[in-house]
Length: 413
Image (cartoon, rainbow, N blue to C red; front, side, top):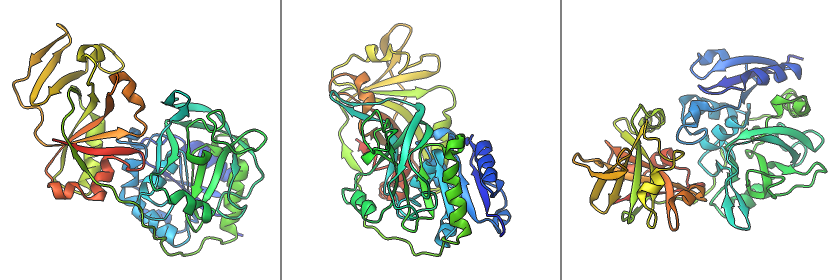
C-alpha cells in the first residue's frame, strides 16, 4: 500500500515544522514541506495536510487571524470538502478556527481566546502557558482522524490564546450532539475537568480539541508532535487515511448569532498609546483588511479608559508605556492633549490626532483592565479610513478587527 503523503503547511512565523515532519515520517507516512506561497501543483498527490504550531504572522491582530484569511485557506477548504484530512496543532488550530473550517466547515463560530481562568476573585490571566497537560478523547474512538488511541496522553502546551469559547449558547450543545468535541484536558487518571489545575487556559468544558462534522478536519491545542508520547495521535491519522475514511461532504449550515457594531460616546478620560517606530502589527492587520476592502487604511493604538485614575500614574508603568518608542494622547471629550514623559505633564496637541472612524476592541474578560483602575477598560483602538460606514459594518470586515466570540467591538464617537 502506498504510504499517505502529508503536506506540512508553513506560514511566515510558524516554528514547529521540523518536529511535525519528523513524527509524520516516524509513523509510516511521507512528509513534504510546503510554504504558503509555493506552487499548489505540488499538492496534487497529497493525502492530507498538517498546519503546525508557532506564531504565524507573529500573532498580529490575534493568533491565526491573518493566515486564516490567506487565499491558501480557500484551497484547503475545497480540499476538506473533498474529504482530504486537515490537522492543525496549536497555531494550526487557531488558523482552522479563524478560517471557519472548524467546527462547522464555514463561518466564524468560535474563538481560541486569550488564556483566562475564573477564580474566587474573578477572572485572571495566566499569560503564556508552557507546561505539560493530560488530554483524553471525548468523542467516540473513530469519530475523527486523530482520536483512535488509548487515553490519557501526556503532552506539552505552549500558547497564549488557547481557550475554546463561543458566545453562541446553542453551539456547544450542537457540538456535543454531533460528537465533535474531540479532546478535553484531564487528570493523570483520565478524569476530565475544567479546573485550572487541569485545564490551565480556562477552555469551555476543558476542551482541548474539536473536529468538523465529517471528522476529517481537527484542531488541537497541545503538541503531540513534540514528544514520543504523542505518536499514537499520528498513528490514528495514518490509519484514517489508509482506510479511506475521508469522503466528499456538504457544508454544514448553522445559524450563528450575528453581531452589531455599537456606537458609544467617548469615556470621561481615554488614553491612546501610539508606536513611534513602524508598527508591524498595524501594517499586517491593514493588509489583511485590504483583502476585503482594497483602499482601507489603518492606524492602531493601545487603548485605556481611566475614569478614576490619573493618566500620569498609568503612563509611569513601563509595561504599559515606553517613552523611548511610544507616545501617548489623552482625550477628554473634544479636548486632546499629549503626555510629555520628561516633564510628566500634559501638553496641548495642535495637530489633529483622530481623522477616521474609531473602533475599540475589548477582550472578554478584560483582564488588562486592572491597570486602568476602578471602572477602567483596556483594549485596542483602530482608526479606519478609506471605507464607508456601511461597508465597515459587514461581518467579513468586522471579523478582521475582532472575533465576536472573544471580544466586543464598538465605534467611538
